[in-house]
Image 1 (cartoon, rainbow, N blue to C red):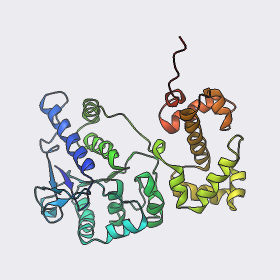
Image 2: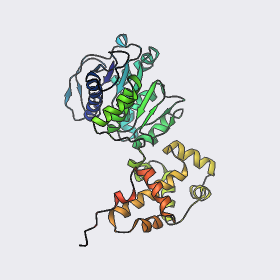
Image 3: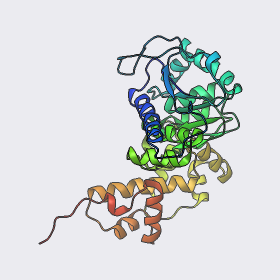
Image 4: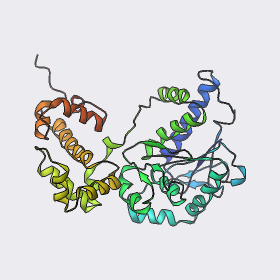
Length: 332
């Protein structure tokens, strides 16, 4: 049984995506398109709230539910799915986590896990798993713009916010609202089969997106951490030349080891990865706003080897530099 838990302010898109992915997988099974899982109950689903009452969405529309989150009905192998609530700041997350309905849901999660349930969450709902202590000592991800808040609040979690989905055994976490589709495909792969998850993704035209890195806005992240802002400014000022870890450490006024630890904790990447992200962001701007050749763009952002630039650009954006260049008029 897949149990979607809707709370006040839930994102309608995320909840709907979750329902659609499971429904599509279930229909494909019934049509004989994939091997049937061991339990016929595996892909049954329902939407509940903490008290069984209708829930207002983030758009303040009332969403009907099919009952309350009742621990007595949770069985081994069930999946509790938590779509996110939109949150952009420390204060909004504090308010969210202090609400009575959220505290009630958080208190039930460890007990559900002890009964053998899998807990899956995306976006701000990953904070519910953190608050429940379910992510301590584990790898997890969250939506990219909440990374600084997550690392401060849950220092015992190995955060990899560049990842779209992370399966850590008893928990699965995913990034922002539309990463909820990736989360649900991971659930289908776990409870049914990877082949069914792949088939459902093809029917729903969902591309494979292993990383959130291409969506990160460095300016947003840097605004919350003076160290990251200093590094971004230093890399930008030296965008056309190579900089070493020692250069970065000197600019930040710290040791290379401390710098590496802080960047990993804040961004889930190495200082070199940060440098690449800043360079790729500048390259993307040049590709989209000028008619410079890829080789010239590569040189302007510090890459003498255009082949290396292409590899790094694809790594961080999932596309080739040519795909970001504007169409040029046909000279004929």
